[in-house]
Image (cartoon, rainbow, N blue to C red; front, side, top):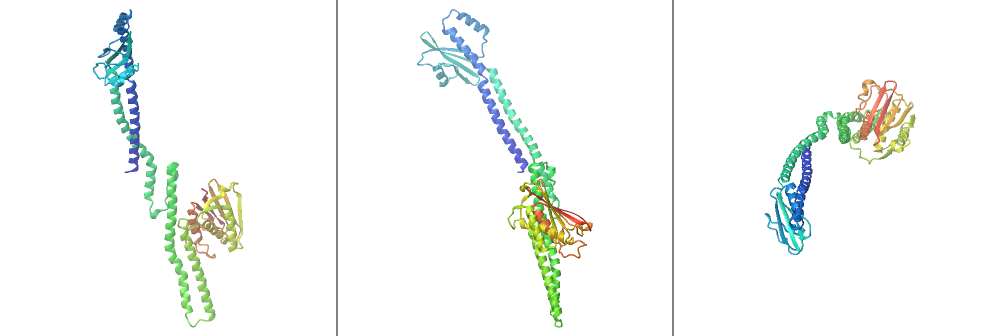
Length: 453
């Protein structure tokens, strides 16, 4: 069963239960109090009948005349007066057999009431002299009973009408409530392996749980896209990039097998083999790092990392590899609250990502000063790496994050085109993004943005 139908059915059932309880409440108290006025009229007649018939008073004739003249006679009204005593109260021979509870109240000296369908009884015990009497007045109340029947019909009709309306309202409500979910499903169906770059528009869902769901899907798509790109890049590039050094090594080994080589030629061949083997090792290490970054980031457990402290570690790491580097850290715009610069991250991977960016900035600027600027903007941390290097040609910027791609002006610099794609994968794993602004010959600014929460 579809979720909308389940919600509608549940809404209708809950409405039916609530309406049933309300109808039962109305019916019970209407049934209890609808005839209260009629009972009081019967009780008044019981007292008047006892006064006229049982009390010897010179005004009794006047009472009887006033009763006949001003007190209307009720439909099917009958009067029963039976002699008795306080110990043995006989049953009154009425149209209906009165219950024991009726006589019990009479024995207690109280006014007794009883109703059988539309026939009402009221009775009480009186004493006249030494003689006891039971006075019972009975009559019909066609109007009150008819009103109660009409109320019953109204409640039954209202119940079915209300359930029907609640079903319609529930159906409209479920369609309205689930409309954002349908939009998400429709958008998700459009996203396939060949267009994993598409994302859901989180703002269009108006905030709340649906926006959170859309953002969760986007995060999942980021991980999937990264994994797909990593897999495709690894398969398509590994064979190509590994074949070149292996071919050179094979050629040098074949050359070394020649018997007419001089010792110097052997040394050159061995140095070439060593150089290509080192290159092969670097390529394999880079490919493995790129593949590792395409998984879920749980190769090592995540921990609380202060980004300002991490930048100092990165500066030291770059200096160890390139002692001639000049790195300036700008931490002037950090807030006093250390929680604003602390995030839960895979420290080793995050350090590797930013180190690659800073190291590239130093290398491609011929080790001119590089500025690393850390800023906090609400729940977002940004790390800007600004160099004064060779810059990136405009036609190459769109390809700069593709594995093994190298800009057209980098032929004088060693590299494999792995660093930035690896950094991008790692930043994506931390739900972050990378922006780049560059002008050839003027330098490059790469900004890493990371959410704190």
